[in-house]
Length: 233
Image 1 (cartoon, rainbow, N blue to C red):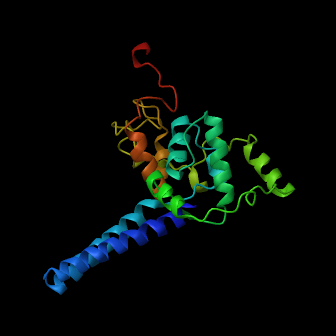
Image 2 (cartoon, one colour):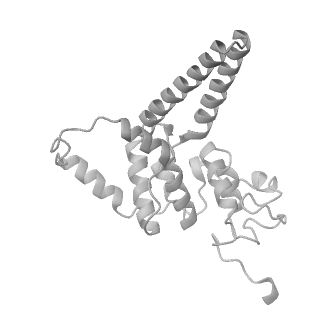
Image 3 (cartoon, rainbow, N blue to C red):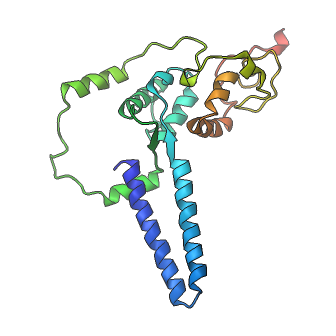
């Protein structure tokens, strides 16, 4: 079951539980207006959180080659629920397939494992043998192309096709990843090796903010670029 259907099933159960609790409070003698306000508030908060947290942007297939940090690929796979087992090239292959399948979408639903498992438990299973259908030639070719190496975009390109700008770079006071103070002459963080402008632009999107939130905790574990030893200067 896809994440959207899993959320629909999970949300239906949540709504029924909240309504049942509200009905119990009314039967117990609590004031109807207060119970109605409580139920409405709970449902509004729930759906707002789910919509803001689990409806995330799809990174276009053409931008995936810009993510040359293995940690970024791992985090994106985790966000999209694609699995985190394997090498960076496996993560890239999963992301390319995912981007290709959702090429016409700007946003896609994702779900935690618990919600996906809950939805799958309610799903009607197809009859045995019905799901064993062979891939047509077009699907097979697309899958092989998605798994094959792609040319890396020109160095210096930013996500969304945005061009680099000295004005934008000058407005970055601290590293978006590790929050280290930036010197005016730097375009790469001297602390964690992050491309400052790349991550500053990325952080302007919802998926970028989620990636940055997860990446910041492990920013010192693996550098995006080698940082020269200042003592050797």
